[in-house]
Image (cartoon, rainbow over the protein chains, first blue to last red):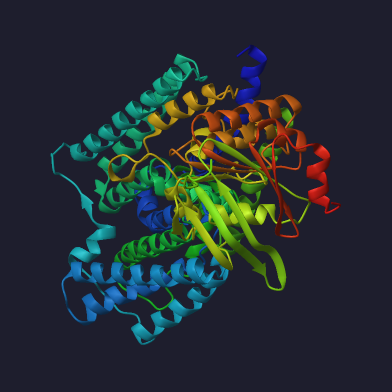
Length: 392
Length: 244
């Protein structure tokens, strides 16, 4: 690769891949400069707690969008599963885990219901989930009798509000939190190193050694700093552990499993996938089942966070989750998008909402800004793709 | 070839689309070590026949046999299991996936817990491309970065995955340059040497006569003559147009 090619490569391919990360960093720096409290340990912890359920929804949503579908019902499913859980735990007085299982079961049923209509009846996901949005919202009102149910209290409340703190001691900071973050950084470094070695083995171009090390160090510093901030605040949020497990599991499913490969194939060229023997209906069915279950996980986390269930819970969550996917680089035509990208997209939304709240920006203005960011992010992506194809 | 059980046989196969008769009582036999060309004018039913064999369409009536056993090819994956591999006219690739993923699509090598055996699939893909003398920058290149000819090469490499016994090629050379066409024809001959039965659908009589053992003509969805490869251009053309 000669000098001109390298420059071209950085301008096109790298720009597209890392543009979203750069944008994220820029937004964080901007809010940190505007408000000294933004990067405080308490506020960082709050961001994690406040937006975890959107990130959980975005994991399932990115798979649906990659397959060329959309799910508008997840906000209502969050409300319905939270409501069922509240009825079981608060009204019936059963243990917390029965509530969680009941919510997950309802999520599973919802997923099977929507998957059936999309995959086996052949109704577009847009219509099925638009119907689902109304249907499950209505059921939520029925289940809750139009009234809020609270409080959960106890262990159920800890799912989204609890922390692991002091397991390994520490003076003014939590050692356990730091150890977990240390393991995460080491794991990231090893996987990056192995990817790089793999590329070298196949004689593909890789970034130069100093750049590679600089990238790893930068990530390690940021992650460890974030871990330290958490550790001097309230410790490791339980919901962050749930989120991390889901992100790792679904990155594996989408990038390394046969099912994940088929999801991308269906989104890339449904016809070709079908002719190649991919069971398109099965893929469509299971992505909706999966979304239903993940929405119920988000429902549990949200109802726990709110310490109760309201008939209007989860309103507009679907739009936040969809926006997270598109800001994170998913293609509107399907076939392109990653769990990691959707997570960064979700964090951009989270950081913007939180930052603007801290600055006292009115709700109306926040909506305007978020709308514009979504539009610009997709426009930037399309612009980059076009430029890349011209340069090629 | 007489007296042996054909690898694939169509007996009195018909396919209707409403009132349209795409195929009417068509008979076709393909043996091992044989390239059978299927020619005919536009709308003669060639692609419909290919799709029936590939499991994309089911016949309205008639019987399909593999190794003399009656079978129902109800889906492309059933076709795969029966050892039938197909290449379709429209470039059927996923542009968002890389070369390896496209070659193994629908027939991925699975390791523990349904995870992809990426390393092995890459090695096999590279060996396959080398075997067919196909030049592609990297097996990790997404298909949207390849030319039409390179894409067709990937599609043809696909047919050799999973030890097929019957390969259906629907206009495999339609989008290719002269040099690439010659390469594809060599590949077809290699398929015969490997003992496969090949159904080659083409408009190009020169291509067809260069590689096939037998030429079957379809006209208005019906059999309209069977010729040895030594038949003259005019004889075949007459059967195609119905001038005879």
